[in-house]
Image 1 (tube, helix red, strand yellow):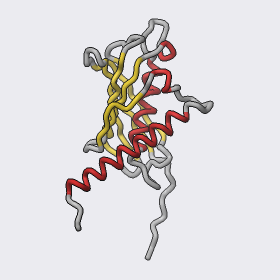
Image 2 (cartoon, rainbow, N blue to C red; image 1 turned 180 degrees about the vertical axis):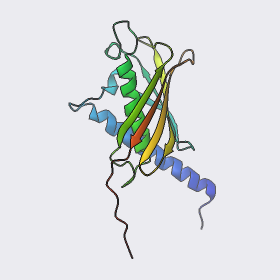
Image 3 (cartoon, rainbow, N blue to C red; image 1 turned 135 degrees about the vertical axis):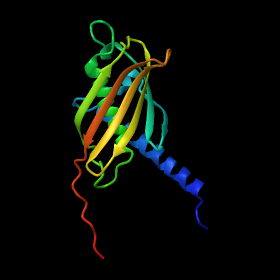
Image 4 (cartoon, rainbow, N blue to C red; image 1 turned 90 degrees about the vertical axis):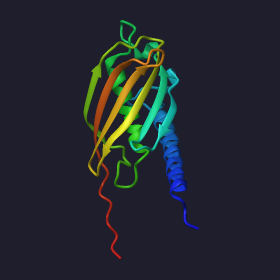
Length: 172
């Protein structure tokens, strides 16, 4: 019996959700190692929603804590940039396969624009979207919103380079 178009769409969405849960957990566990990444557990980072799209998109939620803030009590620019870099990478990883971002790639260009401060204790929604993902380059977008007002506070663009070795083509 042939699968219907709708059942195939559901299967793709379910696989996307499983991959997202896997890579989110994997990335959060990286923070237990001694490396440059935030400890996402401090801010109660969680997945709010996700869709395979098009375009593929994941919405994360967290609350800003003192460890994320500058002397003014606002989220530090470097912290916001790190979250954008890390969480857009988690989204890209959900699409990975051998030869296609399975090693997560490297950031080629991060462009961050700050519109409004995000104060300590603020509930934040971070929306990550895949704009385009080709064989060698991917363009990812992220926006940070205040949950209480819906205001856009930070917008980021992350251009990634695929660092996977080429997968040999098998000849029959």
